[in-house]
Image (cartoon, rainbow, N blue to C red; front, side, top):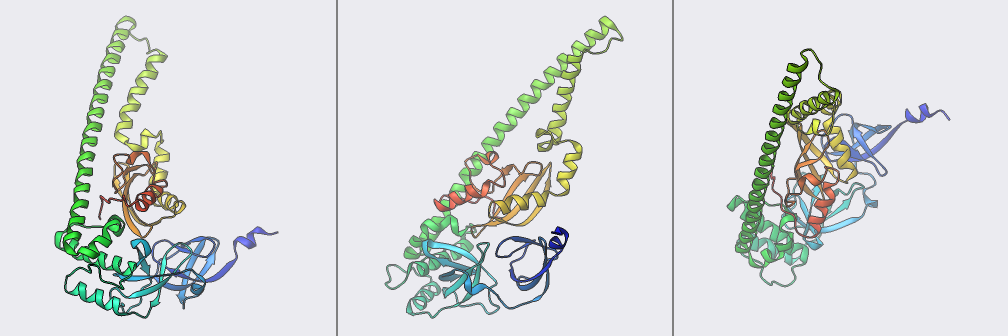
Length: 370
């Protein structure tokens, strides 16, 4: 078999493009050669590369699982008060709190399908929202509609208080907000604010501890270097042109390497050579994207921060996260969520599993809203 012909095979596929550097076919994730506007496109696929050729009508969507819920902004709120982003919304936006359906694409993204017939419950909830009053114990209002109403009230309270929130952070309290209205929404947001403040205080204490340890280590190295200098001078005085012993050369090199390590930060701490460092700096986004893809997340953006660090923006389980990692190792420096000081114990690839547990247990607290 001539594998060159197989690798050079060009196929055509109609796929939904949601933005970013990739597009998902039924069996694999492809890299988009040139980004285009989100929508349905006919792609020319060669190997793992996909090139958008022309807009197309949706194909294969009817075979995907259907999801029902109620509309809140650009999210579908379904059972369990889960609010997921909807992709490829129509140009004419449906009324808020409308009952909608979507199809789940192969990568988990919800693709908007249409608006369903609504009843009196949606109109009742819409009026209550306009009049800034709670739903109370109104009958006939289903769980997904109540949750969508609660999120809408939280959104209004967020604008008034200036306290941001993500749906996954407030999911455990959203039905209480729907029942009791704005006072409960503001109380929920204040609790989130207090939790973030506690985290930042703890983070500051931890940072101060690390800096103190670094100063102590630096002092110890300075004393060691002085001792070595004294030993060298003594050796020179005894044997003028005698070279340093092999052990002293090693010790001296160890001290110099430590000073270089501190200046290079995360790079040298992991034993990276200058050549390896330059290669890593050349493609940090590719490393991060592969790590997130393996974890079921989608990278949206990234930027270098200096000192060997990189900020990564990505979506996971319908939420947007911002995390700071070391470019050399993808070890987390600031997860962007409250991890009780355990940020450095995870990598960019393992972090999504921690986020999933936090979301599933209603323990998520986002600390970086960028």
